[in-house]
Amino acid sequence: MVGHSQIPQTLVVPDVDVQVFRAPGGRASSFFTDARLYRVLAWKHDLCILWLGSNDVADDGIVPNELTKNIMEIIQTIERDCEAKVCVCLIEPRKYPNEYPITSATYKKIQNSINSKIKRRIKNQVIHFNTQTFANSLASDGVQFNDEGRSRVENKIKMVIEGQKEKLLNSLQQLGLEVHKIPGFAIRPVRPDIEKNIRPDSK
Image 1 (cartoon, helix red, strand yellow):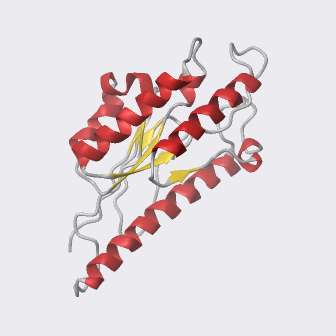
Image 2 (cartoon, one colour):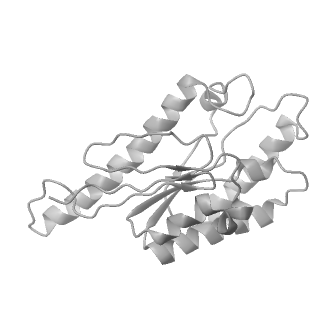
């Protein structure tokens, strides 16, 4: 997994070695110059979970089309260089207090615009954090998730990883192979503040 500080610090999935790369404050606009993020490109893996963009949205002068372009470039680079399927975490809800330079209403407007553009441009699976349930799972700062929110995030990501693992198992079994562990299976969540490589040990 790769992304910002919303990404779980650890994630346990049976038969899968999960490595997490977190880049607090990371941005899509600096992905290719931020070593915490771009080092994911050195890994070959099957699934990459990418979560970024919310810190960019909070910046002054953000241009939605430019941010969408940055995220799409990251997705395409990971798909090409890592030969990985990319599952994108859409930009999550936030509720900014009055002292922040961006209002909650402005953030939500930009968030919805970018998420809509991404969903139209990719065929990949996406993870949604836009529901009122998640908005109500924010801590008092309006940015980080509370314990309930973090649990929801972890469960959503686990479901994606388990689903990809099952698809790979089924493919191998259809080839007539008896599989106890998935050899060389690699999953990596990617976002400007987290890098994660998931690779179960070969038997």
